[in-house]
Length: 461
Image 1 (cartoon, rainbow, N blue to C red):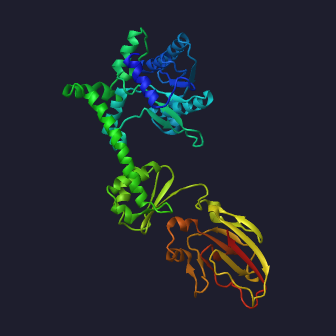
Image 2: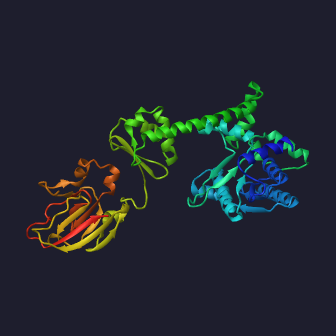
Image 3: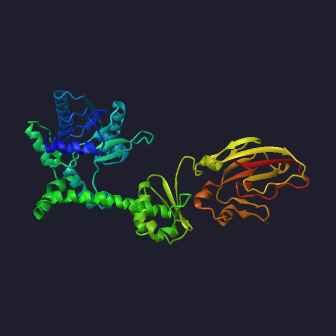
């Protein structure tokens, strides 16, 4: 077996991919890299099928690439699937770059085809030169250790539909250079197509790295490609240690309720890095994480919102993170409220469940529950039906056991509720008067006395 094929075989063996397993899908563009990958996998005895994307970006050149892939697969008896995409219109519709649109479109289709074909993985033809370009590209744009480790031989793509299974992506040619790939094809007399935009330095920053920066670096160090590839490998090993350290630090700062302890965060080594690794996956930008880090000693109540719908609140001695959902009480329906039954069960927002009972009692022997999760009212003093809603700005009520009325916001602040908890706090109303701040305090004026005969009891389940 040639060293070329041996390198690919070793990568697949390390990834636990066997030739007698399910089919491997190959992303086939028609370029030298993907053509070599397809033919090498066939020569190694792996069952393969090819997927070709026509992004309709280069007119007749895109159609010519498709025609080449059809001829190649027919000649080697490989089943080929082709998909056409209106990439420009998708890019404009979603407000993303052409490159991002093409990536999203192809990987979503690849994921669908992997399920349809029962494939064990998708193979893509990234090689060592791609790895080097990725490392330099990330370095130029700014990155952490993850961006300097480059691509992995095995990775996963999570489809946009989160319920769908992740697509396993294999890169078995990461140990091979572009020169080795093209030489292997020439030895077999196999041609390929060339995307001429790859030769235009203005087409993308990656092309500038390939055509301008790397040749300049080779003048300083003729073996710079090998050096950079080896550096990426060493950093990948360092990344494993880094990840272990971050996980340990997160275990030290995370509280049982999921919040982050500010005191513990200030004591960990490289708190800004730990904060970044915790919050960046939730959609918080580098600038936001930096601002959060700088405000660890700032004012309580500061709020940040991420691009993925998460909100972070600096609340006293902790950081709280919540994801905004349709069930959040900021929706108009939740704030308008709804009626509750006079008996039976009620299920509301945020997992609230109430058991509602009517009883006839002897006020001399009846024992009023002391548990704040239960509220008892003199039924005759209530205006029915009762309603339930979340708190509103300006809400007031008369807390039982206190004189006068209070702003509900002040009452909740005194109880040390966070902004998130305040937003979710629900109240029971009799007419337009708050009679119970659920789970916290009943209002005065509706209590059981010596004249009470009929009561209404609400219990949180």
